[in-house]
Structures are given as C-alpha cells and as structure tokens.
Length: 331
Image 1 (spheres, rainbow, N blue to C red):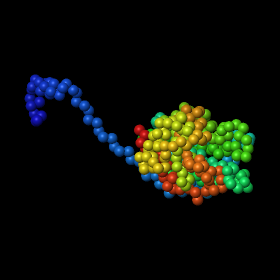
Image 2: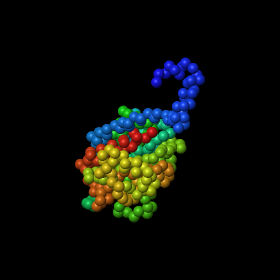
Image 3: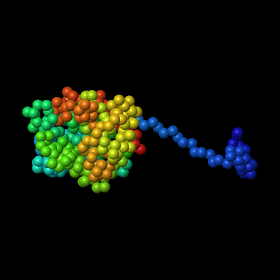
Image 4: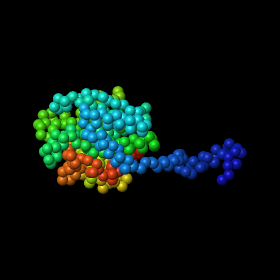
C-alpha cells in the first residue's frame, strides 16, 4: 500500500488506523528486538601460560622471607603492569603457626577499576617451605619448587591478564595473587589451631581488602591447575557457598569442549584461599583445584616432584579457556 493516501486527509487516515487496530484484535504492535551480537571469547594460549609458570619456577622456591620470594613478587607486579592492570601491592607481616614472622605480599591487578560490576580471579603465588609429603623423609624439611601447587594457577591468570589487555571485558576484573597460602603446619607436627595456619594472605585480605568496601559478583580460585592427568571435581565448600557459580563455570567448560576435564563429581571439602573469601569477605567464591581419584591431590603435592616435568599444557588450556569463557560472557 502506498503512503500517499495517508497524507491527503486526516479523517480517512484515522478511519483506516481504527479499522486496522480492530482487525488485529486490538493488540499493540510489539517492538522488534535486535539479535544480540555473539560473545567473542579470546583463544587461551596454553604455551604462554606454561611459559609464565616456568618463569616463576626459575626463581626457585617462593617461600616468604627469601630472596627468591622478593624477586618473584617484583616480577609478578611488573608483569601485571605490563599487561595494563592497575597494580596494588598489599604488604603485610603475618605470623606463621610456629611463630615465624612472614614478610608477605598480596598482589592485586585491577582492570576497569572504576566499574562496580566486577569478578575476582585469584591464585596463590608462594610455594611450600617443606616437601613434607615426599616419600623420602630426607626431603621433609626441604622447600619445593611448586610448579603445580602455586605457579600453575598464577601462570594461567597471567595469560588471562594478557588477554584482558588485548581485548577488554564489559565488566571489571581483579586478579589477586595471594601470599603465604602454603605455610601451614608441617605434616610431622600436631595441627593445634585447625585450618587457620593455612591461607594466611587470603585470610588477611578477606578482612582488610585492598580497597574500602570492595565487592565482586563472585570469585574463582585456581589451585593446582596444571598437573598431568588432572580432573576437576566440584569442591564441597564451593558448592555450599557458591553453587550457582560452580554451575556457571562447569557449564562454560562444557560449552568450550572441556567437559571431560570438569566432572560433576564430589571433590570433597578443601581448605583453600576461597574459604576466607566466602566466610569473611562474603563474596561467593569457588575453587577449581586438580583432583585425582586415588590420591585426591596430585601425586606431586608437597613433594620434590612438583616440577615443570609434571605440568601439562593441555590441562592449563582447559582451565584457562573455561575462565575466559566465563568472564567474557558477563554483562
């Protein structure tokens, strides 16, 4: 129908519109919704994450109060700055279970710090002072390299940071490297204070965050995410405090084609950095942590074998791509 008759006379035009309205049952025309553009998720570079993991290990054991610890901490700050983050170093002295005073440093890299819509990603960057689970007792007082237990999670998040600089997300993202996670009670000594001897850096941050009134929609902790043959089960505290986030992350893994790594199976409860975040910061936080059916933790856990020889880039990729899928899907 031509548009010309509607411009000739107001009366005829209104009659036509009334008849059309009645013929259509009196329903108002519905607005046309535009299709949303598909989410473009960067491709996680597992070789890059492996390289960042190896660089940490090259410093040696990252035990608080050592030169390697100081040097690696400086390097981590520099890498986050190089990848465009606003970096905050939360320096604090912490008392270990045996009375040792630890010069600790939580390292925070923030992207889009002005936004209130935020997600927290975290891992611990220190390594175990003792190989107290090693089969050979002569190593039970020897520090470990912690390639998987510590460095792998940080390596994945450094690659995430690199991607965040190249392709910003629609929300703010904070990457936190927690210190003094692994200075818990030696296996040969009695655990007199329960689980409080572990996760000292995150316990402090959860009570005294790097900025006043800090909040995030949720948090994702990465721990031991590079071990050969690792699979990821649903950790108990994660399901208790943040089940919808576990569901979200496991669904993202399935969507990325990594469902065979992320299994809907019971992983038990694990004292890790996500626990104080849930309890004290009141931010729902989950733990993606390697699980092994027979041993629970990796067979290299707290042993001298926690080296780069036992890191699998395919596992790093499964975790890293899943995390990217989650954060780039946030609006």
